[in-house]
Length: 294
Image 1 (tube, rainbow, N blue to C red):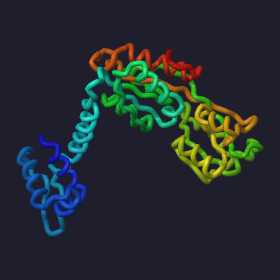
Image 2 (spheres, rainbow, N blue to C red):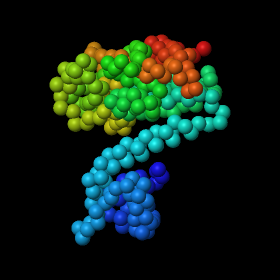
Image 3 (tube, rainbow, N blue to C red):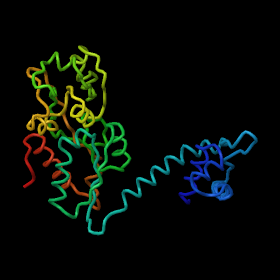
Image 4 (tube, one colour):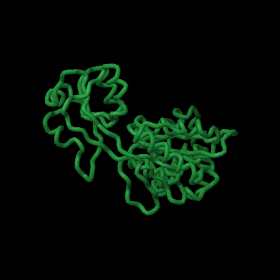
């Protein structure tokens, strides 16, 4: 099946008409109509009803739409997976949340590629839920997230902990002042169903919230205030006196897990068990000691 036909079908369905879809694809309405006829002939069903009130999906068209979007997403993942540089002997597609990328993972994969220049990397970010789905679907080889799902087809191991501390742009701020004045609440998730910042967050009603760690950091640097951020992320800013740890403020930590499908270790064409062991070793060293690959 021509993937362009599916793309055109999805566009017509979402635009609600052939003319609008034609404008989006810089084609004539007759060209769009021809593509839809080809698709209808290939499938053997009418996909659209054309009337005075516009173009509408038939029941067959509605059923195809769900499949078409999945097929297009799968096709895009396949294209990402198979386009490999000539000099690469193996590929590692790895994903993580933005915080883990910044805290430990970017350094780890950089060291891996320096250690083995024939290793091609594809790096992705997302939520824990979306990353878990991608590793289950096979579009990612491994992921690093804060909570390991209890799934029999996924193997996981503990990498280490990321420590979170309360920092402020005011060097003299007390805990109560930091939580009350321009506090930026970064959503670091939950541990066993309880919000990590449930107790301190109840003391204030923050005007600024985000679920992205680097965004919280950049907000502090630009506008001032305080926030709970990964210690490794803010260390350079503390050293340069741009941020200051709030004395006597409580801290918390989150455990990082490296997860991958169990069958991935048995696929030597892309990666082997040694690659996962190396990644795990480097991550553990960085998370616990800040050491680099030797």
